[in-house]
Image 1 (tube, rainbow, N blue to C red):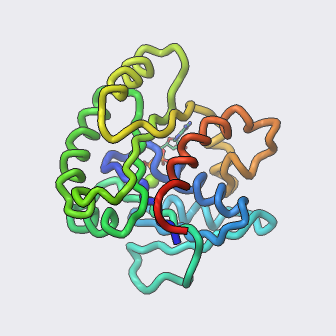
Image 2: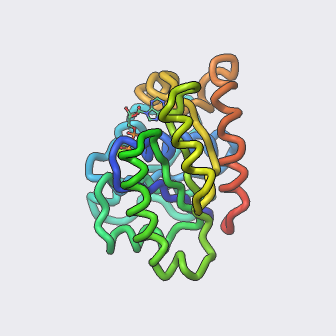
Length: 210
Ligand SMILES: Nc1ncnc2c1ncn2[C@@H]1O[C@H](COP(=O)(O)OP(=O)(O)O)[C@@H](O)[C@H]1O
Ligand SMILES: [Mg+2]
């Protein structure tokens, strides 16, 4: 089993969007997949409830509601992190994940929040042991905007590495409202976006688990 955590205490950076797209990517690749929602708001569970039956199945668990996960062994578990995360909760989620992806928006305000978050995460024992794959995903990039350039320049110098650069696209929104990811949408519409996921998926696939 491989577990992937989307984390960043800042809301709106793309945790749910990345979580549901990763879950549907692996489901489409024939893997058994579970999506675990660690956020009170339950956005990824809303997404899952809208997912049409004819698309590859994904198991779901809204963990903040308690109880036990309604699935056993699966190939991939994707954890959608909460907007505000207390240290203990964060530490538990980080300790259990093979891969931690941190979505970041192209604004300096967001960048400060991420730096603070990275400081906390880097002090955690599970991270200090160095066995986790930690990566930043620049999200909602718009070509030729100053903030996207600024973000890319700032990210070049930092650790952990940037493992994906994803464009701003209404296709994420349109697909999402139907319980779909971009990999569920016709290639003719989604190919340019799918290509941007290659490096990210390669990074995830190289981690332990599966
Ligand atoms: N790459 C993207 N292109 C367009 N809209 C996006 C993209 N990523 C996220 N969004 C939108 O931004 C909003 C916040 O994203 P979301 O994934 O819910 O963030 P979080 O889970 O971190 O709060 C949502 O309305 C989502 O549809
Ligand atoms: Mg969310």
